[in-house]
Image (cartoon, rainbow, N blue to C red; front, side, top):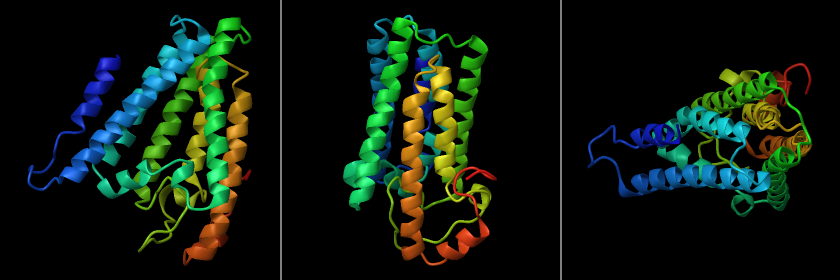
Length: 249
């Protein structure tokens, strides 16, 4: 299964234009993206299985496979769009320009790490008893979250991983942006609900909930920043009321 996932991603690296058209920087960006995906998957697997104290943790194996396959459309789209690829790869606390976002991103990173340690410990000590049908439900939410991410990046060519405004940026109000103001964070919300269930751990809902609170803090600050720095964003907010979840928030 893991070999087939790698094969699919490797296929997406094949040039769709002549070698003369594809620049070396673009090829390097593609390779960095591939390495990051594989290294990230390997690191998550290492954390899960070390915390569990065993590789006989079937929920983790299924999660890794489902997550890898569900991410293929998103990764493939980024590999075919160099500008968006570069924007999405600039992420993390050091990539943020403003102190508040550096802090939010750092706290979010810590909560995500904890969210991968807790399910392994949960499996080791038997804290939760999540039925298989609920594990499958979690995996389906993982797929839904990743497909939502793919839909969002297709709709928004300015979808950077950091908070800021770039040259020629415009307000995007079509597709999922016509439903909520922050569909990328809505995708993360779906994913963060599904992940604890997919990994068979009710206790992981706690760090997932903390991560969601961090997302809310981030999006509110981001909306305030865009209202001040992106022409047309204030008018957009009057048309699209909901921040994250329609009819709720």
